[in-house]
Image (cartoon, rainbow, N blue to C red):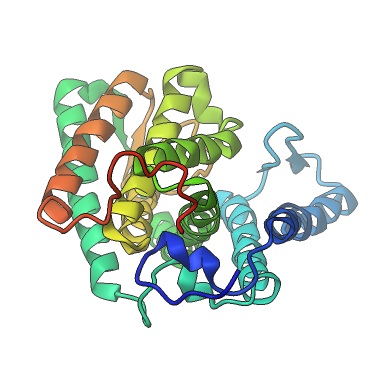
Length: 312
């Protein structure tokens, strides 16, 4: 297919090389970087633990976490794999498809950092208000665990690594995969739902699902679908990148969960995850976020009947 230069986020897939086998190979390559090369950050410390022979230091084979070590060690090791995810996405987009990495974020010639900041700021405010309401409703599940000496050391790692982790996920899900699915059509609702399912799948192994095997998967699906929808509606992934970073930074620094996949030194610790409140509050936050940042924005959404137009 001839290359096209358009102002459409989804039509960026028509830049460079677009054959179907490139997407298949590209996804395999991305997963190789993320899970195979990225696992080296776990494998090397694993052998170090085995050689060390310290009886208080071991590896939990179910979670991949190291026990008997400083939690910041687990946090850094697990997050470093996302650096390889970014590398994998870059190599795939740049060399397999022959187009710039920026094209999976925005069709514009440069990133809109102001839009990212808007997404970050509005979502951070909303998630903070949601926590305040939850505390007022159910204060016994919140415990203050603030330890200044530990908190500020951990905060440095969180501020450096968490935006990398969330951006890596956005580049893959709201960038590469969402644009690739645009080959099937231009129905924003369907594309958002498909993206939500794809985002949910790798999160099904998170320990948080012990709180609800039904509502928590629906929660992850909702996050993925909403971030995909606002990406399509805003014609760029900048809002989603900012909002995702705000969401995870808040959880890591202010109100983490006892059984979270990523343990941090936060100010508050939530001892019981209310899956019903988490899901309902997310939907309320999503509606408010949309009304604040996208309600008055001209919509690029296609008209009914354009479901399988292939973007052409």
